[in-house]
Image (cartoon, rainbow, N blue to C red; front, side, top):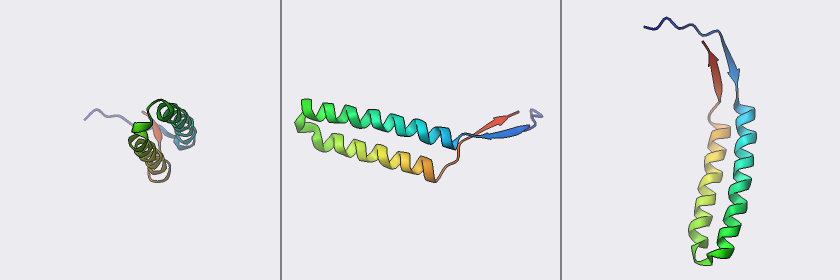
Length: 70
């Protein structure tokens, strides 16, 4: 329909994994701070952290990032 042509693919998986690892560290540190401030939320915050870890695992093992140059 648009007559686009794929010129090349640039993999981004390695960079995405590094970025997600950095974000996860920030999230972990913030959750520790929040648990200290709001101990009654520890279970919810821990569950959220587990969900984030699982999401990062899925993103790094089941998906491959790619930039398409058209």
